[in-house]
Structures are given as structure tokens and as C-alpha cells.
Length: 72
Image (tube, rainbow, N blue to C red; front, side):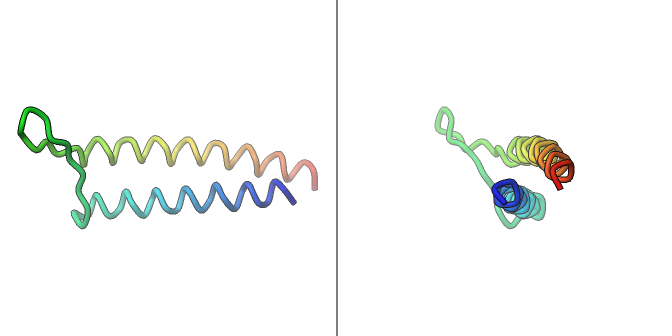
């Protein structure tokens, strides 16, 4: 039961990050920083970071699902 809750939470996080990544890619959302008085676009870096986080979550999810399948 606890594993099912963890798996559901991880899937929810992954889905949210994927949705956020898609918003950045489509241009509906942008992210930037101000450095030396200039606005620097960080959108591509954020997309890269989100892709990495999604991949990590997918690996963790696969491990939890594999462990859950062994218990069943």
C-alpha cells in the first residue's frame, strides 16, 4: 500500500514536470535571470534540467514498480 502511494506521488511529480517542460517549449512560459542589469533567458537551461529530472523520476518509478511487482 505504501509503495502504491509513493508511486502515485512520483507519477504526479513527473507529469507536472513534463507539463511545465511543454509550457516552456511552446513559449507559453519563460524563465530568466537579471545579471549585470541585463535579462538573461534561462528557458533552454530549465528545459534541460526538467528533462534530467523527468529521466531520474522515470528510473526511480521503474525501480519502485519492479519492487512492487516482486512483492505481489
